[in-house]
Length: 346
Ligand code: SF4
Ligand code: SF4
Ligand code: FES
Image: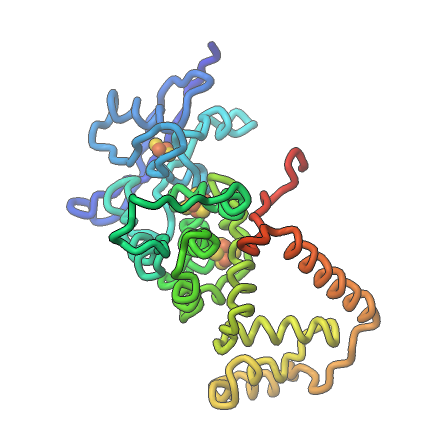
């Protein structure tokens, strides 16, 4: 069995005794096939019993062992030490706690903000069957209905996407990707009766419309869930249900209209269409500043030369949406989330 000496540089912090966080280095011999979690267990058992981290199932199911490995949020129990070694003979692996959550101790973070957001946003199924009849009557979910929520149901609440989210980094009140995944999952459950209230809740301030479309959550999801598809579907559902009276919805509609009509943004009127007359007043100083620097966007925006091609894209999109709606489960009207990348593709 191949063996190598590997250094683990591990974030340490006990708020009760340490003034500031620091890093500890541990060098151990590791065999090929060993996971990061087993290496952490070895360090705890043989070198530093105070090293603190969470883990339970050791099989990528419970979601408790997520940490940042070489700067990327991953599950320690499914990440191979060998996969994290540099190709240049550099055998040091950096292990840190998840981002965007407070450190309780070493690699353990406080996940209460995620739990609170799940509660605030009704992240559970409220069935139509009255409480007193629960357990006496079965509510069968068809294969097609389950397919619509299959991918989103895989979420193990590991927090990796929460840690990688760009919006969380600037606004801790942001609803966060795992909560949006759960909202999509519950809203598409054929037994649920809370869809409208839930959607209203997730569309409010710091919610659905604040997502910056950076796709980082999806890139780093430990269960390969197409999170962005879920976010887009929730936005579409908000439009379908007429929940368009919010800054985020108006902003999205203005983008959609501008690209369709002229192929670029009509920046001068964008704040007015998004924030309304009164809301836009706060932007006057910025507009004046930009004017003084000669950076005022044009008042009249001509359509781009290839606007016909843009119109063609819009028509194709519309047609594919109609096809998808037809192909979806007729009893529930939802299409399943597809994997983010073509299966077997690059
Ligand atoms: S796409 Fe949205 S939810 Fe996902 S990481 Fe970026 S800002 Fe966060
Ligand atoms: S969506 Fe993916 S990364 Fe985010 S909490 Fe769920 S399983 Fe983890
Ligand atoms: S220990 Fe359960 S997912 Fe890693």
